[in-house]
Length: 168
Image (tube, rainbow, N blue to C red; front, top):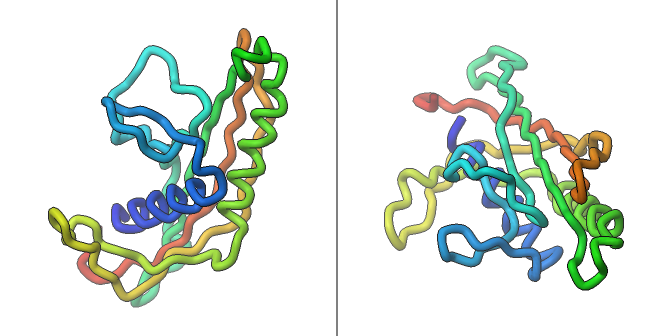
């Protein structure tokens, strides 16, 4: 399922960067679009703000056939403390902006992407196209949670993929 996870991450990262190119994050000295995969990052004392944190939470085989259909649940958490220039009085607006960015990235057509094998890519090479696509459902937004000066929300989205022969 790693190919599906990698494909979804890179698709979402590029779409979010297109929706709001200024939403970036610095990770280990490198500026990149404001989306990170929690399982790939070093743990920190407090989660970064003003970026999306992707976590894979569930896996379910939906149908068993020659190509089994698998549903992966993706959780996207995001937090903001607002703008310091506005004394954090705009944190609701900032969270709403992130809601809109995520909605635009996940509901814009097409709602599928060719599944790619990034492990086969190597340095300087493009990922290899696989035989199937990934596709996803509408995001489901959880409630806003206020913790101290921060507002946080988590959205979940079901990502579907056909498991190809030889894929784990």
